[in-house]
Length: 269
Length: 310
Image (cartoon, rainbow over all chains, first blue to last red; front, side):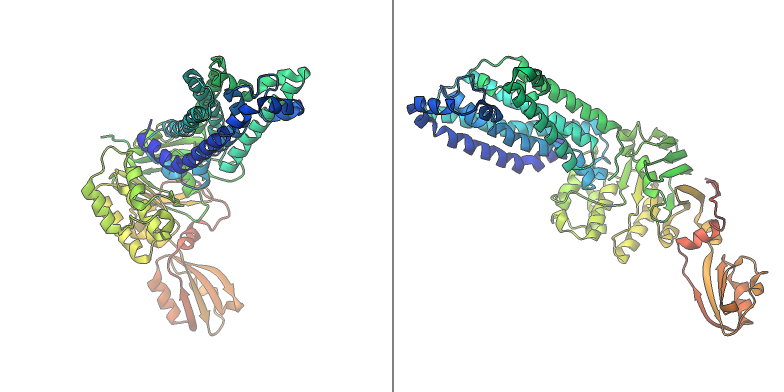
């Protein structure tokens, strides 16, 4: 690990991660403030939601077979952690991850970056560590905002649920951060790396949605990292360990792949 | 202290998918010398340097720095090398001082007095963000960082590009001083005058192949400068046939305009011209083409060879 490299990357990411974290915190607090109203008129809302087609729920990451509005966790899952939160955080992770190598090459700074007496693997690993730290900068404020909002607006969340949600969100983002750094290590343009991972995310998302709609293609869920993304169960404190573990394994695997690829490739600005 | 030469390249070839890289380069850079790597743009200078810095893997052959393999041991090599790339592009949002602090942090020790001396000598602007610096100031920053950890070997790819003439002069003087302190300097350039001013030996590269490695004295002796002569009346080019070191390159207007290649044999030529009806004369200053005139009369490129003892 190289501390100067970690410090530089954190400095570069600090404002981006701050604004993403702030935006998500504001969104969580704003949405939570509607919970008391919803709770008072729960039956009417549930009747209303039952009239919507299943497809609509699936597209936004909601499993209609599971309780949707019967708890604060269900409400926050439907309104925030099912779709908006991961979509927003993924933009941050993919753009930041895609920059780690490709942007240095694209901007012509790679030759200075690689002229230092530190191996390529350690340089990239340092950037990955900084990216993981930034992921925590984005996740932890959201968890804090959720905990405070639950208290303020009458929601019930246990400490166990909050811890499991932290793990679920962080591991989910780590898996795509690994993919993004791998794409960045392979290509020489940030937009190509980001586009590549964006395409993979879209395909995985579609696979997950379609797999939920019909039993004929349920096998498609095994092709998607979204299958293991389960913030509702996490908030309820019942998250199976293998789900975040799967994300973590994918993240560490692809991140390690990025180190190998980057150590062996030619660098031409 | 290692006894291996600072740079040893053996039959180095590096191909790109669609472009020619470098082909079968062999040369050695000795300790305490300034080695000029001379060639036109696109000749393969930067490719060679990128292989030396471990950015590119050789297709075949070997490149070693202080006896270490440039691809597999590049991390160790970089402890002993200061580097300036040909296209200096820095992190735009850093200030000059942040840039130097960042790159300096990777080295075990930076002598504050040496750093101060470099900054004073090159008059670097440290407080502005790099995006607000002129090209020359960015180049100076790149030069300072290369010398910052006082490495025994400097690999400099077109280091004076972007510098004003005064700073170019100052930098070349600094290079000679560093050579006198025992540093080895590998300097690429497409400017013959620059290389002639500072280098001890020169490697000439063109179209990916090393044409020759020779001392600067040998280079000066061998280069062929073009001379264009305008005569009031037609002149038979045979007038120049017996002059040593003089070659007729072309004849125009039935002998009223003759272009000669002159290899440092001026006195005899001037005596001959005194007897001819010369109305005008253009004797171009030596440039890279004047070197290539010596080596590229034939269509085929001769194989690389060391012409001076290394």
